[in-house]
Image (cartoon, rainbow, N blue to C red; front, side, top):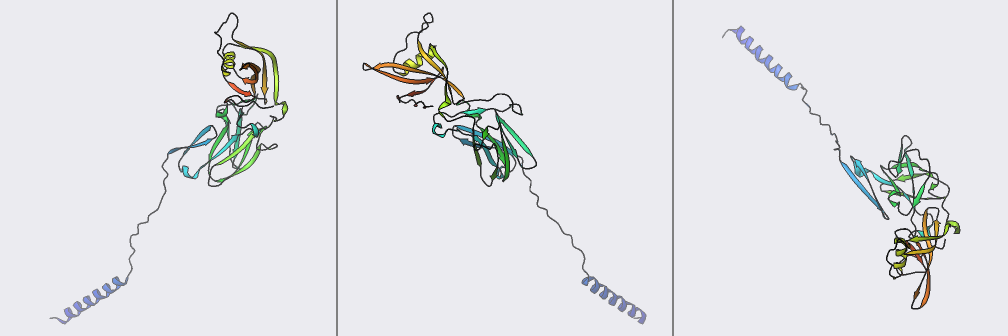
Length: 276
C-alpha cells in the first residue's frame, strides 16, 4: 500500500477518535416539561340554613362556601320575664356591616326603601322579620343598627363583632319600650264587642254561644276596654263573670278579634296575663 495513503487513513482515524471523545464529553441541553398546578373553583350555589327560636332563615353563597359563616343580627325581647308571653318584633329595621372598605346594608322587611324613614310598628306576629343575616369569611366587622333605638345594650346601636371559624349571633332589643307599670295603657273604655269575638269569650268558659242575631246584635260582651300593651300591640280586655257550681267566678280576659291572648287568674291551658 502507498505510504501516503496509510498516513492519511491513520490521520482520519485519529481525527474521528478525537471528535468522538470531544462529543462524548460535551453536555447537550435536555427538554424539560414544566407543570403548573392551578386550582379552579367550580361555581356552585349552596344554601346555608339557620334556625333560632321560631324563626328559620337561610342565605346562599356561590363558590367555596365552606369558608363562610353566618353572621346573624337577631331581635330579642327587652323585658326578659315576658319572653314566652310576649315576643314582639319591630319593623322596619336595617343592619349595615362594614369591613373597613365596603359597607353592606340589609333591611327587614325585604324591599323597604333605604334610608329608613317614617313610622315604626311592632307586634308578636312579625317574627318572620326578626333576623338579618350576612354570609361572611373570618374577620372583624363593624355594624350599625337602624333606627338607633335598636341597640345591643341600653346605649349603643353600633359595635364590632369577630367571626372566627363558626356562626355568630348578635342579639339586640328595641329600647324605647319600657318594662315598667306604665306599659299597659287603657285607650278606650266601655266598649261592646259582638258576634264571633263575643262567642269566643263565652265558649272559652265552656258555655254555649247563643244563635247569631244581627237584629238584636247578639251575642255580645259589654264593658270591654281597649288596651295598648308595651307600646306595640292592642288587645281587648274584659272582666268576664260566670257561675261555676252556683259560685260566681270572674276572670280578666285579653283577646283580639280572632284569639284569646291570656286569662287571669290561671284558667285551663291559657297563659296568665301580665301585671303590667
